[in-house]
Length: 186
Image: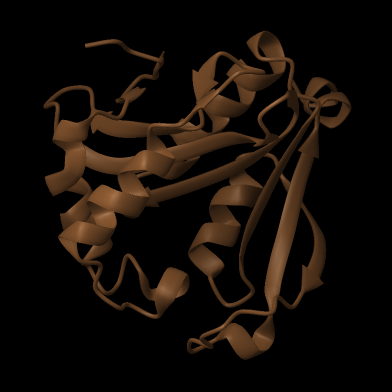
């Protein structure tokens, strides 16, 4: 198994086609998907035809993928995934940070631990200049992870989403961390 990043408690590795069942379980937990699609289930066909290909995409500017499967180091248990994806395939300067972890791993600091490690790797090895992250305004847990990972609130905005979900009427928030800010707080 190729390891992209290892922390004290996590292993982040590239996804493979064999991860379809893990993704299906993750994306079919209504609480996990509450702030993504209102908790609607995702079918196997969608996971295999849309979700997995997106997670397997290589970004030429970094020579890496933008999404990694997260496993607990001690047990190898699949916890979910992390996103650290360049906004364009040809420029690593701005990346989007994201995470989707199963409920069993919530409240244990895994999201912050993985996010901080990705941020450090991005600024030291991947040519990143700015990290951005978005979530629904009402998603206080995700916002707290962004803050604990060093990102600061930038703005509130409203998207033109085809299907409104509970809480979307409050808009979304964007957080950011620049290389200069990261260096000041190391």
